[in-house]
Length: 389
Ligand code: NAD
Ligand code: MG
Image (tube, rainbow, N blue to C red; front, side, top):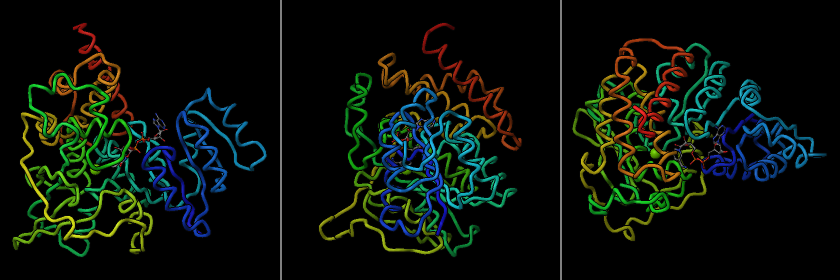
């Protein structure tokens, strides 16, 4: 029996993870499931999978969660400290699928006690890639990528020598607005941005796909995860989302990872690693597919890509600032306080103002420094949005 814990179990990645676990319940002992406000779903899944504990991040929802779990034998807990305690429990495999910087600390806690961390939460690598890797090394834990592009790169690199890698190409669908005229982008609404041509994902990552902030986060994640020189990391728009990433080697070969847009592939790969097991994903019919297309990822349309380059070259705590500013700008866009195109301007301005606080690329930093950088960037973004400075 494998002992597993799923952070963000009620979200899009979390539910896909539970889908795979529920197909072979005899193989897993579910230690903890965590969620946010959706305690009905959380309680239902915790009961069905006989989890030891269900944790909601919302303190005020503890009575409701308790009531829903009454008599089931599943323990109920709530709040940030309960979330961290869940990470300390003895699961061997932990899915990190909380959205945003809130996912960083639970992941670090699991890594520090030697767990395998399946990392969907890309923000962890963007904010604190070096700290994640160091914590895994010191605690004896292992990090496995779940973001589809990074799982693709990881798989293409199996058995290869990193010294032979010339470049990594991360594909991007282009999101909801890839075919919109540039001048229309400023008037895009949150509802329009929250639709995705190929993937079914949480609201925040879907809007980040439309702005390409998602791809920007992924470029930084690629640098941190694989220790690549940013000059070797490229991105290309690939509207069909069938090729998730390609690795280019020094003999000119490109190894592509091809598959339908279904996160259960990357999740399942991380769940069964190092084995490859049958997964319930569609088998591609290439003839039916006909052709695959590619376009340049243009920085005029998607300024987030340029900002990602700046963050990759600055290093240090600039990733934490970038992500925090993006989260605040995204909240403001969702609430209708700023326009779609203002998000990148806000993040750009935060990075410019705080560049002297970002530290140097070679600096080692701890969680406390990341939390402070995140906080300062949130305050600064809030001031810029409110027009107070
Ligand atoms: P989602 O919004 O569907 O789910 C997020 C989960 O986190 C929910 O369970 C929610 O209750 C919980 N949560 C939210 N805020 C929280 C907080 N402050 N504290 C504790 N729990 C909180 O998001 P998602 O689409 O499943 O994405 C999860 C993560 O995986 C993100 O980092 C995203 O970038 C990454 N990711 C998602 C996909 C995808 O296909 N959805 C693909 C690649 C990477
Ligand atoms: Mg991705």
